[in-house]
Image (cartoon, rainbow, N blue to C red; front, side, top):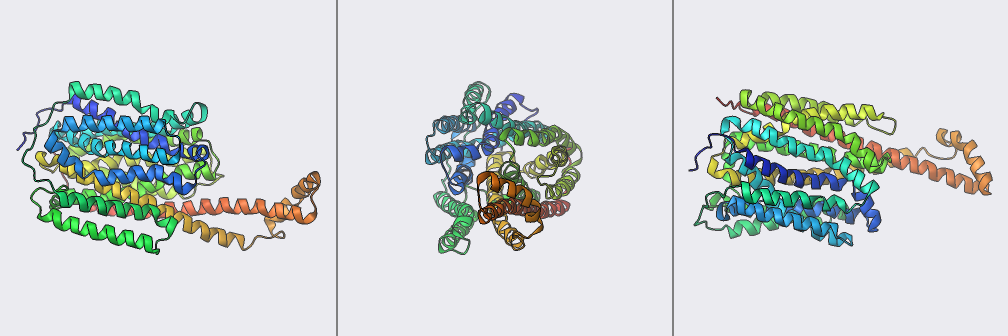
Length: 506
């Protein structure tokens, strides 16, 4: 049994913060660049989606290994190797010459990130006294949220004014600095020898998670009722069923599912997962709404998202101190009330919404997220024995990763189906005698005369303009519907908060 530290080792926390900052910056900086990368590589939306999906799938599949690798080979050694692999993957991304080469490079990046992130969080818990874990995780959360704050704005600037490749290459100097600090500041943890490696758990988890995440990401393309998707779901669920059965019987499982016997860890994981679905859905939809629908530049999109992320970062240490003194329930509930109300407010965004109004709603939402995100995770992890921190962090990160993938896949499906629904309804009333068309008649007539068109060609042109407006409006309405669904998930997370048992440190 490992002894609890007397005081926080801030040198370790700083090293982990830099690594996590880089990894999260990588995710948020890529999102705003995807539209331009799609044009440069002449890619389709289905293909460019794999730049994100391949990264998330690799994270989800390999994260279960992190606890075993850290215990067996040492947390410092594995964190260093994972970080080096992430930096190498970033270099490959910057050198990409096609969508396929970028997808392969993103897989290499994710192989490092899948080990680095859960080990980093476990490292922090190992060097922090239990009565200070809230504050430490709050400080850690500042960096975790500073990256999303900086990412869209920095990414937008690099894409718009310099070169999109720099969004990947920028990871390299940060990563090299972190590798140096890791080598001199981190101390190797005690190795746990004699492990019986869980080969069945590894195979069933890899097959199960891969098939499940692949089905979630491909369902929109092939249809949820297609034989391909149904086969993937059956294979994934069957493998995961065998995985659960094996993990509960294996003396040293690759994922310690028996941690779910801890009720506080279980309910905090459930709340965090439900919140992740609603949160990632909104984070995925906002850049899409602002850039692809409302026509804003990547730079302006980043500036709109910046205040919210900064607000979240500012509230992280506040929520950490609250957690240390009063427990998780109150601060999480308050945060989720703000997140629920403001997520519903996002459903009203459209082309006529002033930017200041957008910033206001997103700012309050960011404050709510800063209050609830870290205490939800910390509440469960704080009750896990020190020697199980690696496996607890791996388990929690895997569940949250799957939830995020599920959220993106689900909201993509809802958005596409609701867009078809709204387009069908709106287009039924469109003809050249409709009110919109009549208002356009004088301008259309002038355009037709200037171009030498006859009446029929002018009408066709007019209908095409109306059709584009209908497509835009239907997309706005579809995304609005998605925000309402996201609100329901945030509300569910809020209701589950009342099952959080108070955990006060004395």
